[in-house]
Length: 452
Ligand code: TYD
Ligand code: MG
Image (cartoon, rainbow, N blue to C red; front, side, top):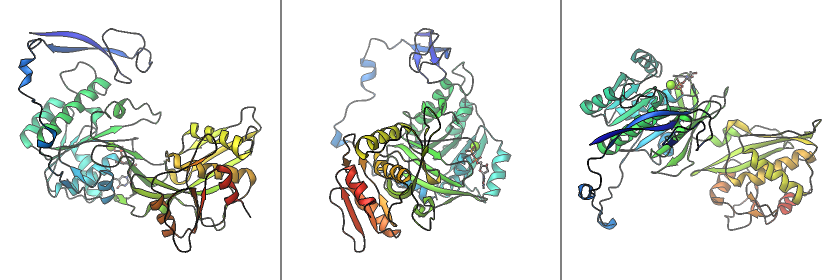
């Protein structure tokens, strides 16, 4: 016996409610719940024995764990972000703003992957001819790549059944719709349903599935955000408008380190890999400049030197401005409070701007010390000594807390010609010609930096 009933699904966050409400109880959006008919199969209700045989528990040690074989996408930077290549049966979400290069990347990896295994490129946004045109431009020859312009899930399911591609690229998940739901294509319910079916297909058939998802500028990521928990790997494209550099970051990865970063440059012939990105994010100052501090950050397994720029300037406003670009604004407020309390510097009548140069985002707390030093440097109009890198977390009590990957940060700094590091106390390698200035408290770091 099957019975239909209604559920109400929020079109903003995907939250589900059994009755209609004016306001979504999950995200608080007004008038966003839309009715959806769902079928419930009651035939097996009450008899748990009907389910028992299908999935019997096994002992963990007796389950065969095949060493996951990984296939190269043809782009080493992407392979690294994926944790060393593409895993069969993986479902990967690639999010990013429109125009950042998602379709370009998909075509480029189709080329790499298609050499070994059959690839199906499902395009719901562009016609096959448009895809072909782009492929010519990218000089993708496309052997082993089949293209279908389709956004009807039931048709796509039929194609997957018949063609059995090993790699499925879906551009984009927001354009797909399924007959099983009444809501419009692009609605959260449709996006979720189609994504769930594609993920199920990946798991049952062993095909690897890439889902492209759009993120809007406002950060209302109704699309990709609601899919994050379903997939194995979530990649986001980052980059500044006007800059050719594109970063791909793994936000979540069941098959590798999260926060891994891949760096690309958008050229006429598509995305080119940038193998040594540290230099990229450093401005070339001839002399040290007040308010500029080089931070040795660690993104996943990759150390990266980036420049933190701060500008502190007297404010004409009653509420001075606090602007953070590439950095969490709350973190900036916290650091200003620490500077006030433990650095003896008062910013209440100052406008404060902080920018991570090169359009990169730094979210690790190890950036604290560098940001604080940049703020203080700008405020006092004093530069740090030439060739200095800084990293370390700041505690609310003014202590400098140890961070992970001290070794790789220092080695990267030395490799790029830096000769001094201000860092938390603890074990670290000693290198000839390289001075380390370990600090226990914020004041120690200030003394070390502005001693002369
Ligand atoms: P695209 O992959 O279409 O973005 P998305 O799928 O994320 O919306 O990329 C679009 C931009 O990339 C477009 O502005 C042009 C630029 N581009 C290049 O600079 N070089 C190229 O070879 C290609 C294909 C695109
Ligand atoms: Mg596109």
